[in-house]
Image (cartoon, rainbow, N blue to C red; front, side):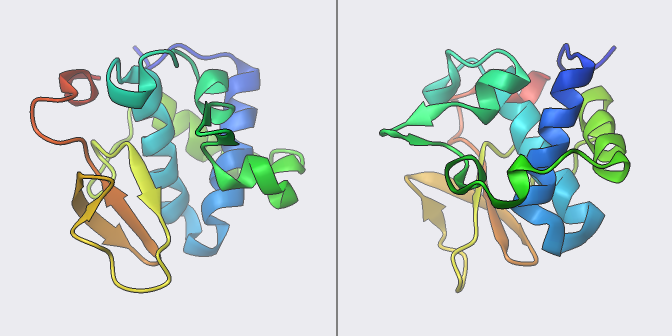
Length: 146
């Protein structure tokens, strides 16, 4: 049973996002970004109550901007999905989740040390240039279930 329902088009869309956001961090870095995407689709809380599928997550607008910088800026995101990233995306959708992004709903590249919190959410860990953040305790139980 996959972590979230998906179609082939979702795999390709997610693969493009994973590559655009973390290609420089290798397969592991792309898998962590994939964790955040799937976690947002599962999370029925906070900023993610109205996103129920991969398309919703990727194209979510918050504060007048797309949640993911790659959608806003284009670049690699608008290239065709490659088979290596599709395999990684499918792995995330089906079962794969690991620390520091296991329960993370946010990540960013601070171009410096990771702050202990980001918009009030606790730091979960770092991989290469990206800092990952989980929801505060008791604010998003659904992300721990999926």
